[in-house]
Image (cartoon, rainbow, N blue to C red):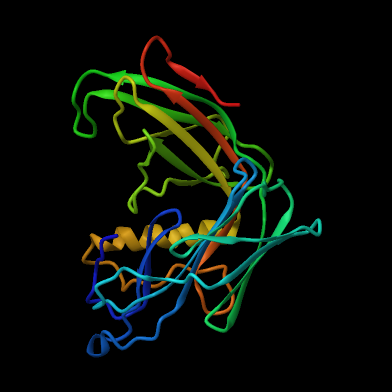
Length: 280
């Protein structure tokens, strides 16, 4: 992961794709390379994926040659309000996973991590799923100031309840996640009276395999991703205030986020006569 804004004075964590961590912790310009590492925890469970995933790492100084230090000797456990407990196995550098753990909408989940002699925890309740009507595929055969020739996708959704719901859209093209730091694609439905249209700002070609996932988010997780979005926006601005870490829901004194999300997902191939996808 690339680094940015190394001359800032406050700690930050950079996070572009889910569970791919690159982080550093500059604290004072005169003391680069002498900052204390901070544990970074990023986890996700959903109602569709049977594998729960958590990444544990340590922040590094801005002058360090590595993006982060992965922690391979942590104890990672997820418990639910039904009395089930799952110990995640180390499956790669800093990566912890457990199979056959599928989340349930409305249930609560406690993540605990023991690392470097300290205990960290987070509690999340899985929100309801988004109400997605369809995904419309449109071919644009002329250049504009905003896009190029190709197929474009628009996700149509509407309110799912009387309360405000918070979401994030992820899009994969041929197995590669398209969302980067500048396009975390967050939205909330408080303003929706009819359908909401979210157009994916990337062109696709005939034959591309696309996967669209709409994740429901709790207010704390939405706030975390909003903080990340502000970081990446500030990266390209000379008038933004100094960057601060996005507010974590991991306690105490850890960076990162634990996410329990219900998901609406569709996978399809671009091309042919298909012009819309009905989302299950």
